[in-house]
Image (cartoon, rainbow, N blue to C red; front, top):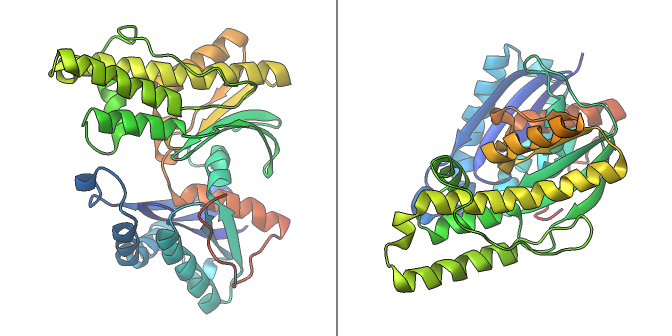
Length: 334
């Protein structure tokens, strides 16, 4: 059996996890509240918080897993993409920890880790078989991927500008709903009418996306309405949230459905932070039920950034003998 210690510090969550083969033993996450007052992640504050959290988080993960440090076979870490200062904390700690124990290092791509979270054995439930389609909607990334193997991920389509998560967060910021915007819009949308307002979606060829137009049209729509009624947002908050959420989710899944039909796959998954959105989850299930496909929807605890997903990616890399040199630096884009 292989025991992996995994470390994730790409943005504003410090996380450590322990996996034995593909079975999750512990997954500890320290979130940062300091960014709420700024309406978004402040990179310098994030890296400082990671420095404070990394040692107690790793210690808690090892204790909760019921193992000793000497039981660890390899240390997996998020190398990128992400915020450079935040990544530096996790990468530096992983290197030092692995070197002190004389254990190999495994570098993990944050986006691949999100997709591979579907293979974590943490509770009952099936896992996808290859090939399958995955919609990755994570922070600044939106991609449709065709997976033929754990690391054979063909990008069928992706955003050419803003990502879905950015569009949702921007809409929340325009309406001054607070941070993080995605969960707030999702909560308010459940109280609103998704047909109340219509927003145009871009006509992008193939499987690619563009969300800058949706974001801009939403801004202009509100600007025009506020000229007539200064309380428009407050009076129609739930309907606005429901309408913009439906526009984005429909745009996402329309291309996913087309890609699944074109490539004749019968398994469709979602991954990444936006996969926690309730409408996206229910609409994917509806589409899969319509076609007789199998939908793979991650547990909420694996949607946001966490080390468990880094650990499962690290486990499959360990089996392939893909170890990292200690000189490898982090990277911000990938």
